[in-house]
Image 1 (spheres, rainbow, N blue to C red):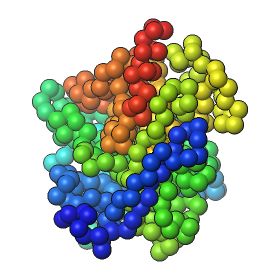
Image 2: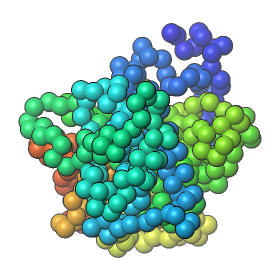
Image 3: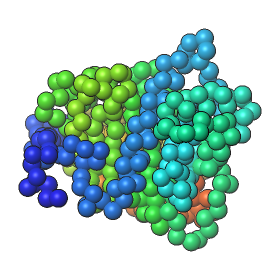
Length: 411
């Protein structure tokens, strides 16, 4: 289908790219957007079936998160601690079970690399709670889900589930809830359900769902959607990317019981237009300080957007996890996400995979601090760990080399 010739099937969306220091748009793009499950034609997307399945299951996974979060602080809600002191709830395991179950129905030969395994669920007597939330969101089936079904689905993505070795591999990468601390903090904190597909070492598609994402107006966003006045203020965001097809976003549907009022239009996402480092908007890891970043040798940091001096950069307060920072860069709300790799910290693939393709397809760049691409095949056994040299740098692309040079000069 020719997108420009078939205008009757599309709604018009306007995109405004703003320089971070000015409210004046640098350029305006008028693009036709198809009102369907995906924002581009199947002919242009080699992995459209996989992406359609990913979009569907991530939306349902976000519904699990919202439902569990509602009961989190009630007398029946449960909050437990993992061995690494990261808070987690049945939502974390419920999302992994749901995604594993649904993807295995459609693509049974594609394995899953994910964060959790069922040992924790069993030892903390959470099996019934997880089965309950998964059953509610799973696609209809003649046979009801059993405890064994759900536990097996969780373990399908767990550690030691499969050994890849050096051979080329196709597999899903899932972070069931990136930013569980944000999940527990309240309605304002961001958390993300992230799913990507890797084919022979390359990330070919990704989907991120963020139920707490706010309207663009509250962030001085780079995206303006015509007719958005009817959009609820807390409808969340679904971001998708497919290799060669760009990064797109729309509102999550059916999170607050207002799906009938939510437009089904997709907007194309682009990184911001910042071209000099001092004007960039930065994100860093929640566990790190600005002083731990090499750029602190050149600039101090402030979170006061109205009071940034010549020797300061703007540091955005974002919580929690890595994927929401990728989402910020891919949507144009941030210019840079910089993460320092520490010797004691293992960097997991699910904290980065889906973010990498969303930023790439939005026009940005992701490398380690030496300028090398993130190698997803470096962990030849299980594909669960990445080893970026010194750290991870995520930018709008335009200022990427400038920052690499700054890092190199302080190393």
